Every structure is written in C-alpha cells, then in structure tokens.
Length: 120
Image (cartoon, rainbow, N blue to C red; front, side, top):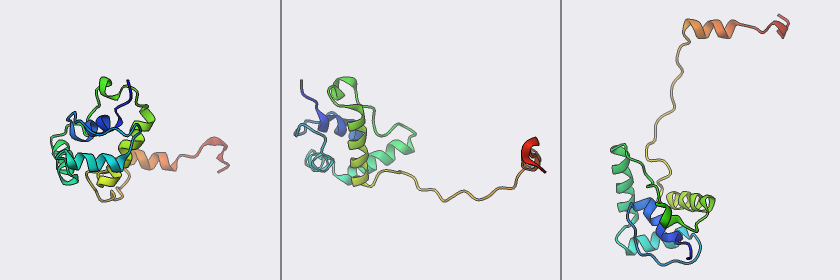
C-alpha cells in the first residue's frame, strides 16, 4: 500500500476524506489546487478553520491512522505546516503583546533576594 499524502493532508485541513491525485510525496501546492478542484478553495478552508476555532474544536483535524499509513510523521507535519502557510492559516488569532504588569509583594521579595555566593 502506498502512502496517501494528499488525502491525509486534505483530511487534516477539511475533516473530509477526499479522493485527491497522489503524486507519491507531499506536495502542498498541488494539494491546494486539488482541494480547490474538489470544492474546498482557500476561502472555504479558512472559514472552516475559523469556525472550528470559534467552537473551540481542534483544527487541523487529527488524521485517522488508516489514512496516514505509510506517511512519515515528521514529513506529514512539515507538509501540513507548509500548506497552512500557503493558506495563511498559521495563526487563526492575532493578539497584541501583553503589557507589563506590576509585581506583587511576593514577586518583589524574590527580586530582592540575592544568593549567598553573589558577593553583596
């Protein structure tokens, strides 16, 4: 049995097992073209990802073991990351940097402590 790279990657992005052309290796560019042809353009994949995030559900989807058989875990993860980068879905939520907070009394005490070998 040969690895079904595109089907596994497609499942991770859509949650659906799709019949996609298999080039015999992971190919994120070909994957996005195949997903588009199967009715999953980038806009639909993005909307699906955001819906899952809003529902606090996992995305990308966990790929069933039978579907990822023959696919190396590291190669699959790298290809999925590349596909997400092409889709501009590496981060579904952008937050501003957190501001500084004032130290409480315990934190201030810890900052004043000096180890005995410090020389002060």
